[in-house]
Image 1 (cartoon, helix red, strand yellow):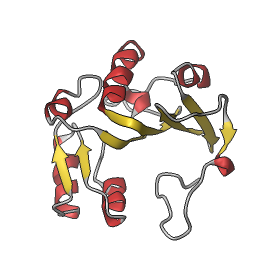
Image 2: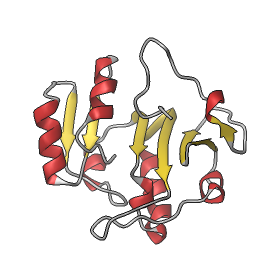
Image 3: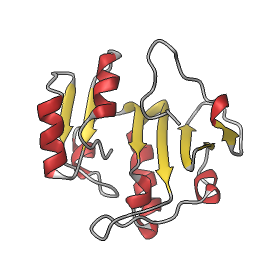
Length: 166
């Protein structure tokens, strides 16, 4: 969700995954399509909290990634957005989210996101990293509660995670 120019989507494709990249900004979506033309990367025009186009695909996902997106969702829209995301996950699927709480521009406002808000979601675990949050949510998979350091979140040396970098 909020795929931007497709950097993270292309990385997931390079690992062998099929990816649906939802991006509401026409210019960003067009640039992503230009930069990352690959049959395993499907671009779609959609946005939170509605996600109507993604839901109409009739797909369920192993992983949903929101990198630098959640803080742009208005707080009154977040419960609905979270429910929409949850219904798109396969059993045992994971939601990964990085959140920033600084900046914003007049045409792209940002709202604060607290650890309490994130950890109030059933099964959510928040990892603090350099002023951002990495949130993992696994339904049907046991998780522990409370914030952790990023060092406890597994990454791989063979395929460094571009959205997990400090």
